[in-house]
Image 1 (tube, rainbow, N blue to C red):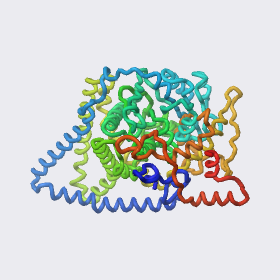
Image 2: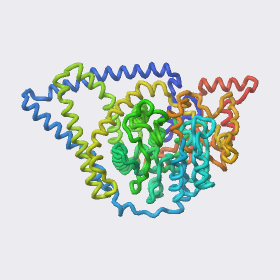
Image 3: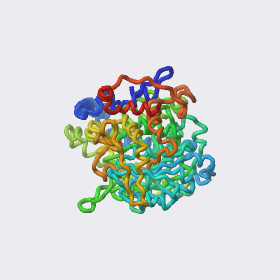
Image 4: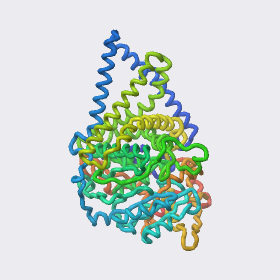
Length: 628
């Protein structure tokens, strides 16, 4: 049903899913116990199948394939390792061999931005405790965009702003819009910030509160004009910092940006990183309104929704933005951990950022990815083939990390001596492969764009940094399977509740001249304050864990009464599959009205309450009246 709502087949009517609060999980809703029982049953079946079929069958196949002679076994292992080494190296060098070759040379990066296009771009900057950093971010943004088209959306799990970010914003330019959302949730900040942008804005650029635009940024409208299927554009990302860990993260993001641009050229990128991204405003708003409201990974969920809608995400590698990364691998201990943040500027460690956050989302999106593998229309046969190649590699990556601990346990339990003795050898092969790959890419970067070339110490340390990331992947994927997925339900209806409270958010901005005080927020019809999430999975009391995701978001100054209506309409409509382009829907095409599903239990109770004496209106009634 969700897939029917996101991407309707030609000639069929969409199912109105996202106006129902409990339809993010159409079978179990938000019942954690039932979800956990079903999840653990599926995990147990997966472990049994992997143990009894995949791992055992692989061991049996190796026993049949390997020749009996020990000398022949050694020769076979040698050629196997050589073939895997060479094959993997060729595949990973594909972006540098296929035309157009990456990364672009300095001559290829030359571009003059169109002032008319820049005048139609709005900027949303989610932030949290950004008093020290927001000034530099805004100063760089003002080199390209109008101050009235920039919105800073401060957010925290507090009733008042936790620092003087508002004053810092006003010192940069008084026309820049500032909002404060008393809930630490980046997706909500982005939603309110997008509603706050003026109507003249046609494209939305989202920036993290520690991301600096370069002096040679490329904003090229040709990405959107040449292909109406393109809904967003990614940019190259680099990390600031001189520590060895920061330099390894910098080289990781250089490679990540190159490979993501390669996927965008051949088919589509999977998502725009939350650090920076440029979107068509209508597509961006629609995906925000259909967002599952998870506490982190908002960027990948938006990209997943865009691909489900048969949209494409292009890549722009003629320019790079700069941001910050944690400068240590593991969390600080003891007194050093006091006040540490898990995400954003000043994040405490790579482990917390990756293992506990970034890498916990991919396994729970496998169902959506499978649907995309079968249904996605890339616009041409060649693009469709490339997309499915990339998607199969994604499935292989996720399943491999899930199988790693099972493979170790199986090997140790069945044939520990003759199998474990080869583990150091395979690690050595892995390190040698990664080192060779790094050297090869560094040489190519030296020829095409010398600025991107890593230091020698970075190249030598990078294979071991990737081994650490492999551990983060394994931990994060199993954390998702055992804890995140069963106990943190998707909440597709939450953005509509936020949209209903948008006018209160706009009216409650504190006045820094008078010392700062928030206007009281009236309770909603069911007696709850609309700022607060109804599910504890979204509104978490730990500020360092949740409000660090906070982000800045603008709101519709001239059309704030239409926020709830826009979110309701956009989240329940999807572009027609045959409205434009070969085999996809136009991202900004008008959507038709959708028939409503039978009311859910929670909605039925609310409507029954409304019929008894008129004691307040249900959420659906309020949205309907505002739309009218």
